[in-house]
Amino acid sequence: MPLSASRLVPLWGYDDPRGRLTSLEEGREVPFTVRRVYLLHDVPEEALRGGHAHKALHQVVLAAAGSFTLRLDDGIQHESFTLATPRLGLYIGPGLWRTLESFSPGTVALVLASAAYDEGDYIRDYADFQRFVGVPVTSDGPPAAPPVAP
Amino acid sequence: MPLSASRLVPLWGYDDPRGRLTSLEEGREVPFTVRRVYLLHDVPEEALRGGHAHKALHQVVLAAAGSFTLRLDDGIQHESFTLATPRLGLYIGPGLWRTLESFSPGTVALVLASAAYDEGDYIRDYADFQRFVGVPVTSDGPPAAPPVAP
Image 1: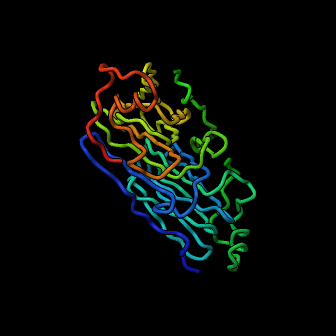
Image 2: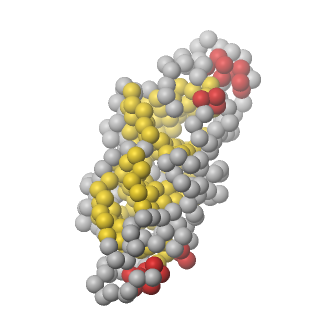
């Protein structure tokens, strides 16, 4: 199963002497209606965030400030992305295990999501995730992250 | 006419040793469906942004990083807000002239908007704005900002 449910999305922007504007619109850069927006901020450099997959949620993630590394895993293979500019979004569809790490000081990760927070949409155990996506359950996948809040 | 079409919105958040999460959801902190999200970043400290009103657009604005001052004007009176934390949003309804200034270095202003960009929704001349909101046209209002991009 390829990592087909993710893709980098170059974002529209406008620069002038008053600074820079970067924009995401439904139906253009965002292939869903945005029902929730959240920010990760004040993240320690050594922190590991994510550690789960979603059953149905669609997201677009970007670095509003600073930089971080986002790793996606489809149950068999994985791919890492370094997000370091507001001008690049990463679309993440359902069924991908994600971890976020290596947050530089001052980083703000911005996430646009297709639904309100719903604990029932989370898969927080890696073996459950492999079963969900229909691949053989292995013992060497990423350990489940400790229980986390929305 | 009071500045009734704006209000500060405390935002939901969750903090743990892995950092801070701040969230906005439709129907809770955001009283509209989000169709566009944009960021202002790399804004020089001396820059003046905004300088317009909207006919129909609803927005929620916050400081994702850093701080800035947002001034709202209803055609008669004005009020200034300093936004300096991701945990506080400012809802702005239609018919308010806004200016943004005093961006601290590294500031990222995040704006959630109820519609895609539409130049026809902008009022970029202050006298036109006063006519739009039905107050006497004065000559001492803020000068119209130079033409700006979306």
